[in-house]
Amino acid sequence: MTSRPTLVLIATGGTIAAATTSSTDTTGYVAGTLPAEALLAAVPAIGEVADMRVEQLFNMDSRDMGPAHWVALAQRTRAVLDDPDVAGVVITHGTDTLEESAAFLDATLSPEKPVVLTGAIRPATALSADGPVNLYDAVRVAAQPASAGRGVLVCFGGRIFAAAGVRKADTTATNAFQAPPGGVVGQTDPVRYFAPPAARPDPLPLPESADRLPRVDILYVAAGSPPEALDHAVASGARGIVLALPGNGSVPEAWREPVARAVAAGVPVVRASRVGAGPVTPDADDAELGTLPAGDRPPSAMRVLLMLVLAQAEESAP
Ligand code: SIN
Image 1 (tube, rainbow, N blue to C red):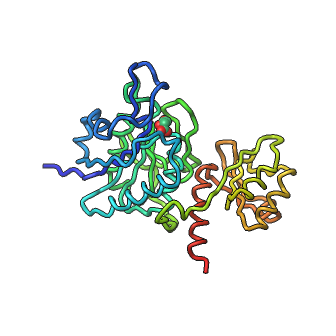
Image 2: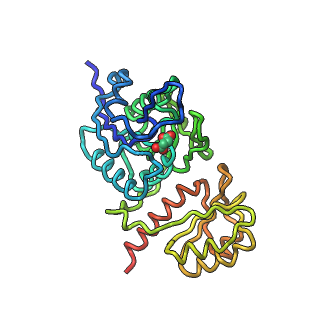
Image 3: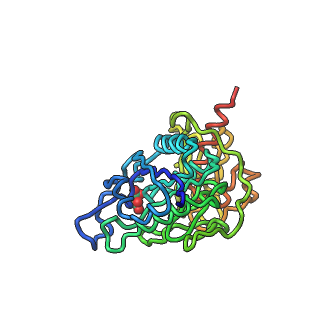
């Protein structure tokens, strides 16, 4: 008799849980309608890999998720992982803001067991639905002891990504996700990793409630964008700013003064890039203006991280 690991599927909605009346319609659907049980029932082969428990945490379009959902998802994931009978967690999620939830979970949990997010670009009713195979792959990844100790993972389109830095990079392609160099850590056919797990930073504190997460705004800086947007964001309550800047996080002349003003007022300003690939490297502006380079993180993930860092700083302030 073979013993299968017990995994928990935490379902949150998304296109992977969407259905339409036409098998050729891949875009006109409401995300987050099918229950978690239906997703599992569509892939009987999962029963050969793991014994699945199911939790329907939300059933929603991920565009409507925010800090309260991230906190609830992280708290539930942590509680489930604490069960000694549970070998790992699979989370189904809408792809539109999967990168934010992945960044939040990765920064706040230090899971000794696999935690794997997945989703789909096409609804469950599509001729070419990618949800069933993505779910099957995510379960196979979560069932592998070799997936432990690697932080939170995203499994999509046959590739395994480290959560840090992963981003949705295509609106409709089934291989929608991309990662910085080294961010694709493995593949699914068969499940294998390209390198042993790397050392990981200590997790940031998981706030008890989303109220503890300060507001951080992302400002997209186009050619000629008026810099007043930055003063306005600070005046209206942003406690941190992530600039999605041209190129390698290049601060336009007109933005220098407002950036310096925000930093002087105690509002950290991160230089991220609107390009979509490649790092933002440290430069002279960081010394002159007090900005922080985003490195390999996209603006979305950088915002999540800055919220958590600011929350930690506030928590430990005298
Ligand atoms: C969503 O993010 O919930 C809808 C889009 C998707 O899952 O691909």
